[in-house]
Image 1 (cartoon, rainbow, N blue to C red):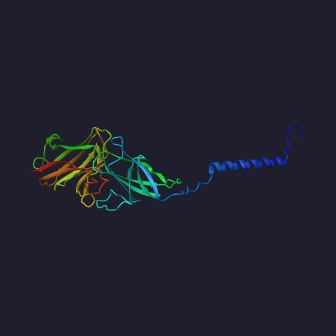
Image 2 (tube, one colour; image 1 turned 180 degrees about the vertical axis):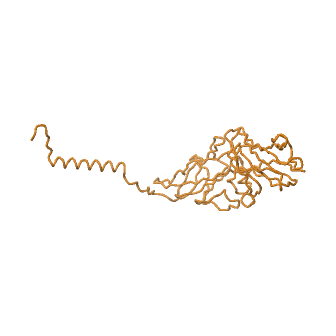
Image 3 (cartoon, rainbow, N blue to C red; image 1 turned 30 degrees about the vertical axis):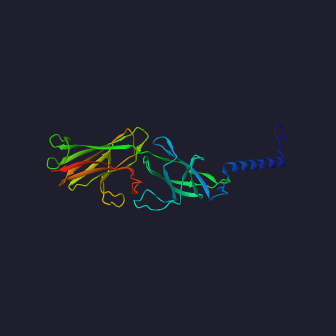
Length: 304
């Protein structure tokens, strides 16, 4: 054998190859193991499902004065004015567990949370899941385990009118009404204010509706400086209202939002153009128990 050359027996090579294969198999199992099958829980029926309700507008847990119903997956308790479906179960507050509880089987549901008599926060609906358990007490936490509700702030609605000045070429003539014999075009600014002592309260996103006045046409609009569409709603079956509208975003306490609308006379007639602040447009369900708040309104006289 030449000097410096090392000879490795075939048996040694075989051992090295086997060790490499074993190590490779271990690494593959660690990093590339097939996903495990879902856990088969021992109990999936007759569960006691626990959860909490939290008012994010006043930073407080809700422990009373609430009605919480659970519906089958896919049901929308808010999206229809004529909703009449009964819940499959309703929750009650358990002071010992310090949580709301409801008897349910494992599966997916829609939880609908509304206030009882006080009427401070908006109703909410959530898609939730109930998992099984191996515990003998059959108590499980809802997923998500906390359902948030939001206290309603106090909105204000007002307007300012500027008529178009043909001499200056600007909307610089302050008006208190829309007089279509004196001027042909107007710039109306609606101001929406939001106030409350609790600064986390909100006004949910919705629509600002405007009564249609024949021959008085909106030509363009903006919300907080961003150009937006002026929509024409001719179907009252969904929300009970018709007219022109623009959409506005969620608003928080201390904010002032503005909606600017340009109008043009195309053969206007006298009347009253009423603006209605339809907040929380996602909640179409009728009834004073669901939509317990009143619409904020503001009126402009249209005259000759």
